[in-house]
Length: 338
Ligand code: ADP
Ligand code: MN
Image 1: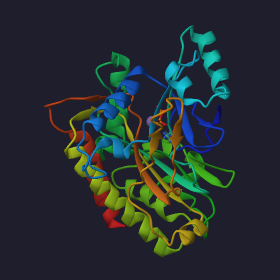
Image 2: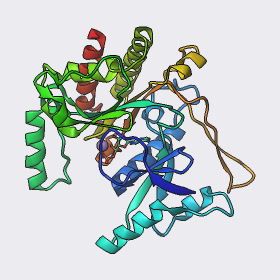
Image 3: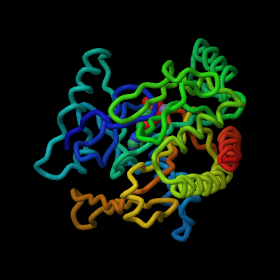
């Protein structure tokens, strides 16, 4: 199994990778994020069989396949079919890291939620107004307080972190969005326009709506399909909201990742219909531990995922995360106004 740089991303640090076949996503990670993915898996195993899809956090997270380190863990070795090797970009990157820092870097391996999309538009929205946790040093606390105070993180408990949209749409993007000059915050390349983190940081309580609208409306899809996309995301946000209210966690600086398909032929082929939540099953063959089959259904036409758990923990008995709830509430009321 070899890894290559990720095709498309909305935001985040360098070093994101995907498997050569596109089905897996991998990024450098912290122990905290791995611990969180593991504990979510453990909790899911204790769920009643008839739990409704969408009621647990795990239903909204990318599928989790384990971790990779330069030494290659046994856990991963078991998942690699006999005779194949993990090589390429990932090992190179990992070795460079070891050389530079003297430390091994861990990579988390997840389902690539973009797999199967022909021309995805991608939006990363960071949730919450508090952007640091108890592990942050004084300098980071001050810096993050300032970012929050000066952006919609503070006013709306969410902030557009980055977005990548198709540049294939009727008419041109306006030169400016509100009081923002497009050329200063966006870059056109390879059929896409990428808006960097400064775009989202400069949006205000009043203009955040325009940013979200740009994501959903700047495409060549018929209005009918645009409406379906927005409706489906509203329903998903409602489900995720209920899930948040039922989940005792504290999650700082995580994101909601919105993805939709721009290729109309895929919408036509699936008759404009899709489930709100796609189940991607990993079935482990009972007889042979070495065999893990990844079953992937038809790729989604749009999807909503909860990502980035570097500052996440379970807090049994302490109630739901009010910051997440506020962010989703505000997103919902903007979406409903479209
Ligand atoms: P970081 O710690 O760098 O912020 P994130 O988990 O937020 O890491 O991921 C960074 C970017 O990578 C996201 O904005 C998104 O575009 C992309 N990404 C994250 N997880 C996945 C995934 N499972 N599949 C596809 N793309 C992903
Ligand atoms: Mn992120």
